[in-house]
Image (tube, rainbow, N blue to C red):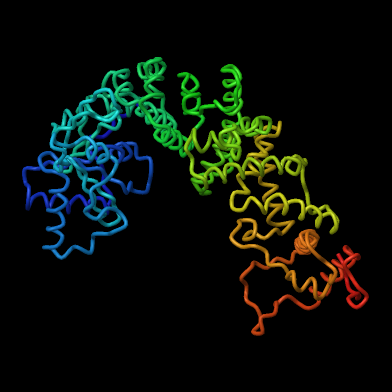
Length: 552
């Protein structure tokens, strides 16, 4: 940490190719223009956090607009027969990007015309998403969106940015890193999250900057500057967050925190600044502030335990899907609330939603698919608790009958969870009163048992296919149980599924059938199943369908 950060950046071959192209267009059409990269690309390159190049690059231009430069760049590509470098999966000369949002709303003349010279233009070149915008200055009034956006100098552009580590620039013309606030490189070295300007003023202008600061603290594992921490604890910031920021914007900020590998750091900061109830409003639960804090602290303990357990199981070499990880982190933190919601009736205004689902949909503003996955992890973890609590599980010592029974128990618990069954299993293990080292070994052992000794089909457990039943409903009535009717069919179908799982007869739906359309299951297997169903449901049989065969 004591080494000085370099003021130059080593470019990858693909980055150099793109930057050389930008400079060639600049030299031909606007030789006075200085092109700089700003924001996260510069920060991440200096930190050398990833071997993979950052594909999102924000560029600021000294004396031409983003639209003008993109037009010149496209002309250069056309003249040099290089249009094949353009791709349509990013922008293609479009106006957009995060920076453009405020410009479209606020960068207007008094006559209501859009200020084109301040808008962002985008291109995708060789897999890099490039956003171009002119240097600018912003002035704030009572709202968190700037009242006025003007053309600015490089110094004004730097000081308008939220955090010092995001106010660093890479000058493509000179291949030099520029730190116009004279704080960014130092804070990178100190691993310090600080604002470019006085923190209280910065947060009152736009309270979402606090959520961004907390997210970077969680993402990078850094500390929040004491001055920023004191400002975040100011009641005026709490009021501004409640009154100036929409629930959608707050939810987006919180979701970004849970997308990191250490959301517990973000939760600790929200608790320490007394903002946890603003970000996770518990109005429907009708509990006192003291009880709320107790619930959040319990959730934090669960989250910390899950994070630690997950970090020992999922290493860098063992990739973990980010979406499933985010759902697990939400589920672990919100587990105390989920368990409490069973004791709280839904509000009268919306009887279909529990307080828990209302918190996720209206408080945190998660999507329906996110909410469904989080609830599946929580419900699955509770269903699995009795199974995972078995010490030193060793299916190899079981009799065939015992192994069949255990296979069916795991199938019932895991199959409804689909592709996130591992996350439910991990959450269930983290809830046990056992040392984490024991939980890690238990997780590995359970995975071995599920995949190996019990031979539960991976594809079926991941929810990509559904197990095809040996007999359809019509075949059951024709060949096995002619007297079956109505609701009893569900019990029979479940018995067929259990028999198939116990006997390891999995065939994903959609597999080939014979030319005549009949099932490719062996006739002997069908006969054994028929005998099993008839012995289990004799009330629905008649004499003409009785027969011999092996029954398991």
